[in-house]
Length: 405
Image 1: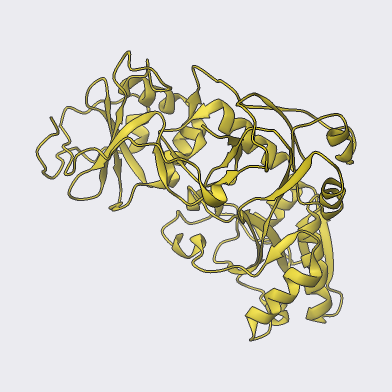
Image 2: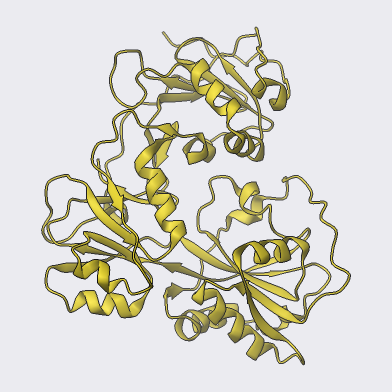
């Protein structure tokens, strides 16, 4: 029977203490009964199929973006408390149900009962909390999301306390840093590496799936019998990040930003792109902890971008041409050097990509310079090349591709 609705009496102990193994004796009650544990069947943009769908099996897959490959690998191997499909609809995973108290600050995750089968079988609330306490990445995600406390009520119920009310199901519960290895992996993706950069080789060798943003590869696939191309949901957004003390490059963006962004999507990049649409998740990151990185002594006359990202390069070069500023150049940096330069604001402007949907917004914006101005430029999507007869695929909120349940 669900507990009677009342405000929680949990102490507001700091998360660091609770993650270190502290215990509370006060009880927390849910204001609302657990949400129905009804899985959301993939549909519409979240379901990827060809005109010939085969039986479930493990697929060989290749990715021309290592970040996409990592997301797919984690989606196949881990279960977080909940799963969000590409439209943000929740389904149970480790948590069979969830509820919140009247204040909205305390959310109760209810795991499946022992012996019930499924991915949650064998996990107790204390074991899950202990796993998060021992994992620095999980602890960081909880802190970024504003979590102040973790309290196992019994074997099945774990209460998560937030610093501020969360009237809607917190997206952090779908973050894979909170995921644990699946006990029954089942069918999934076998990710293969491709020597060099020609992913036609992967298709010619029989790969079932290739995820790519390369229009030449997509054209090759469309002309190949037995293959189909399917667009993925829009999952990446490219930003112009301007350090607060120098916004001169921002003058390259005219007042008619809609037409300007449409021209960037059409002419500046080769990937499938369009102007971005509000709302944007970074508009709600004002409550993130302040940054304390010392600014550089001088600001190089550069629009900086990640060297391995051809879309970012195209945007940076177009902005330099439009800015018309003397000595201004576009410069690509290796990933680690780019991250450091961005954090320090060591450039006139930065072109960077970010997820279209952020499960933990403060974590995503942590590497930006303090008090930066952030202007959205375009959003992009990849495509998958699927072999006809492959089983259906599903797309999660973070853009990860996985085999459909």
